[in-house]
Amino acid sequence: MKKTLIIVVGFIIFKSGFGQEQPKSFSLQEAINYALENNRTAINAARDIDAAEKQKWETTATGLPQVSASVEYNNWLKQQVTLLDLDLDGSNEEYIFSQKQSMTATATLSQKIFDGSYIVGLQSAKVFLEISKNAKIKTDLDIRKAVIEAYGNVLLSEESIVILNRNIEVLEKNLLETQKIYDNGLGEEESVEQLQITLSSVKSNLNNVERLKTLAYQMLNINLGLDVYDTIILTDNLEVLTAQNISLSILDIDNNPESTIDYLIAQNDTKSKELQLKLEKSKALPTLNAFINGGYVGYGAKEFNFANNNQDWFGSSLLGVTLDIPIFSSGMRSASTQRAKINLEKSKTELTETEQRIKLEIASAKSDYQFAIEDYENKKQNLNLAERIETKNQTKFFEGIGSSFELRQAQTQLYTAQQELLQAMLDVINTKATLETALNTTILN
Image (cartoon, rainbow, N blue to C red; front, side, top):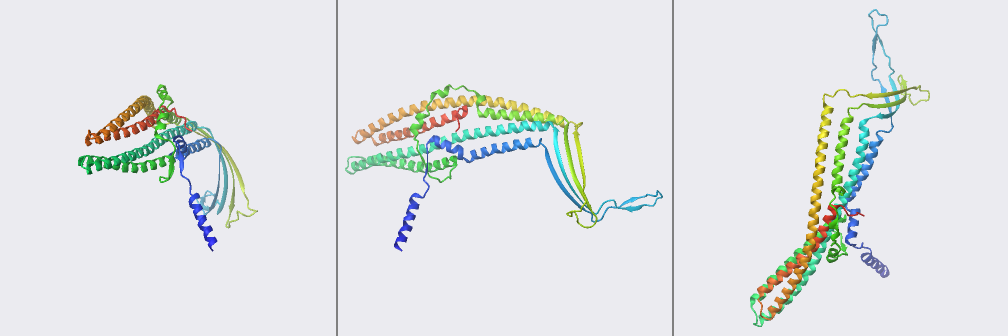
């Protein structure tokens, strides 16, 4: 019994220690690659391409031979009577020309020979597939940018927590020393209170950042396509990513809107409007279709004998061609064509507007990225100065030649500089991602 109990307990410990799934770890690039495969929006965008492929074949198949078959069974509950005056003397006699029961089996092969709308439909299906593929690229670019921003927000909160904890440790040490000085009658109570105010403020900021960190991780999980409560580990840090994302060569890339995905999507819209105009014009063309069918019919007087081997079946076959010629539509086709022309002109204007907007977005993204790099360098210098100022004021305060108010000002200035530098790092990463998205220069794996 004891051995059995030991084995069961050991198995439970093994399962709890080793059977649990280990948290996933991601570098930034690994997170991007994972999201492009598992993000729910990306998955649906890929499905849209598959659906467009099926729709393309569906459209193509309408112009290929079509075969249909039908079986019809009729049973007259009361047969139809026909009156005939065979003697031409005005006396009509009743005749029934149909059998009480009949069964007909028919197969038909039909084929389009000429249909202008079918030709336009094939072109439209190809454009629709192109639209779906461009939409997938656009989705992937947006997901990449969202993952970079979410990943950066997590790192920002992690770095902020480290810095805030370090500040709290220094403040608590200063407060303890100041309290001893005051207890020995060598300092003022205000000095203790100033440090207490500063410490309380920093602790409050720490609590807030810890809550934001939880939300940042959850947002990143959503972008990755994970469960919102999954535990993940990030292997990159903010400083290294910032250094990796400082690349002034990207500023030299030409502002060519025609290579961007937004321009290609707008161009797709113009193509679809051109095809709509072709479709309206094609409605004025004749359509030509051919068909051939064959079938058998059997008759029964009273009982259902169609399954018997001796049932007589009479065959028939028919070949036909149908030519439909539109002649007069009271101006309906003309109005539809004119409306399609107007929509095409609107689309061309929107394409020009998109081109100009993209030029402005690229120029603005380049400016923001350049400023982010300059601001980052400036914030690094400001932090160095703030650290020196805070150190000097701390020395002066404990030597009795500086006031607690001056020390608190220096500490507040230091804490602000710390957060501004972290934000400047994040801005470098995010503005680089925005510029890459605007230029559409990123190769998506």
